[in-house]
Amino acid sequence: MRNMWVVGLMVLAGCSQQAVYDNMRNDARWDCDTVPLSQQKECRQQSSVSYDDYERERQELLKSDSPAAGED
Image (cartoon, rainbow, N blue to C red; front, side, top):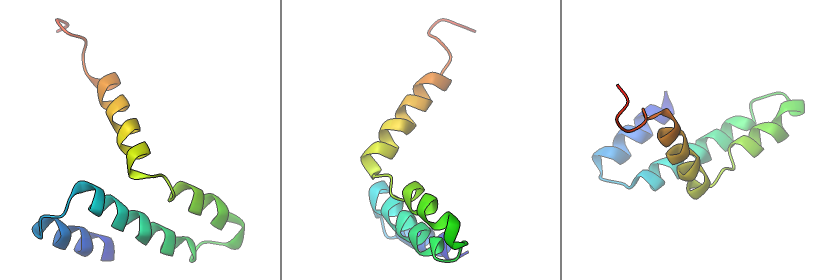
């Protein structure tokens, strides 16, 4: 719930997509402290993806999900 408020406020304030992503990533790192100790390392690894890596993967997925040109 806290994430939604923060993201909403940042969007209203005109923050960049990267700033929103970074804030959500920081919140995810804090949330890693609440999972069992045996899962914290994996949780932190998942929440440490840089914005550039995230955006690159996102663009690749968008391209692969797009229908081929001229295909209906």
